[in-house]
Length: 415
Image 1 (cartoon, rainbow, N blue to C red):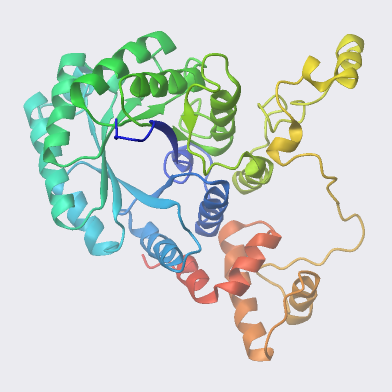
Image 2 (image 1 turned 60 degrees about the vertical axis):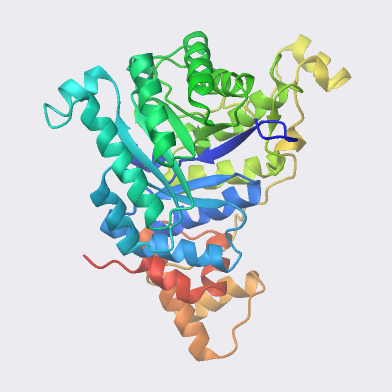
């Protein structure tokens, strides 16, 4: 524990890395950028914004790093996910030289070492490969390094401790405990994380999946264990619980659990920068971008999260909201009426002309210096619509008009 500072829970959102790995869904690079902007506004500590060794991510990554340098994406930290290999580290610094935060991942369970690596690496080889990658990343200028133990929940604890100590000695700042198959329970994960944190002496990052429907509980239990052991805790989240198979820990649910769950509320400190009142806006945008509706019963942001129909419940809620509501809808940025246009609509898209385009931007009260500037933004809006394949939101249109050169980089793909 740092002297004079109580340990805290910090949020690392992985929507733009693990969320987009979800089968059958995807995000355009503009949409990933907007999520980073919204996550920053919400006070999230770090965004795992993508894959530095994947070529089609390069321009997007560098453009977002440029936004960070301009103060647009600040104070959120932007971090890339790579395999824990020297070659991935070197490729990362070649393609994204100003990306300073990394998470390096390698498998640690007997199941995966034996049946995934198939003799390419044994248990000692995994540690050797990981430590070489960490040292190389630090030498090339990484400011923070998280080491990911993939399938940690099925790894032998003695080996996991040895792996994590080696990571610390090589220069890692955190250990990411990956419940890759979602097989932990809140009981087992608490015991394992507390032992790991005590014996290794590093902050622990929780990365849990929802295959058994326990992802939020496991994430909170793991964070509690790390803090009980005297270390900061980090929880990986995704917006609207997107993620591989049954998904990851939902960002809003995790925040609500820390703020209101018995035994957690008031005892464990959430990063003070987090602003829950941005939840509604963020959840709606992610739903639109992914093309996946918010479940009606989603905590906090679902259509029924504050809906009451039965006589007893309605009567109780009207008398005093605390009878049947644990927290207030206003806390999540809900409650304001939403205006839906039912008359004529002019949208800006890949086949827009200058007059329709000007009409759209006039409604946003955005003016252009001259026709040349308007034509330039129109061309970018067309490209943006090619990428997203759906009408652009007002915030997307504002972003393109305000940062045209960065938008151009985001839209540029060079196979």
